[in-house]
Image (cartoon, one colour):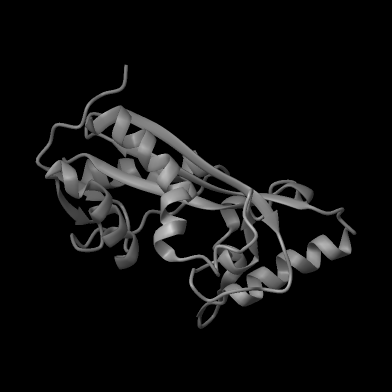
Length: 203
């Protein structure tokens, strides 16, 4: 039995304004006051785990213990079958440069590594999202979302972010980068995880 969320305020363990807005919109029907770890001036904890759930737990528990409020975090990325699940938890790291994140570089690396392996088509991949809702007493609930698809080349579309221009979701002909944001958000890995979170803890 999952624990129900009953607090008046929720901390979203992120310093990303876009992510805060996305989560706030998803939780709007539940009259929850949402504030981010960034707004509260909390430091970003070091993510030392090698799994999405491990890193999401670090962020959620750090925020919950620092504020005394329930905290929600997510860790997400793309896993490519032929690369043994890489980049996985290092999805954002593959884009890091001294001047910020360069996802064109990251997508190019992903495709180059597939080419070097002569990986067969379709080059199957998944976008994954793990949500952790943690309470100050140490309890947490975990919800995992996934959307299956394949990696394609060249990059297509400028509607999304991250690796969206090289990912075609299963059953579709366009990349996430070409897809209307509303349509993508209805079927994304984050939407899948959020639907499970809402059903488990908010309804």
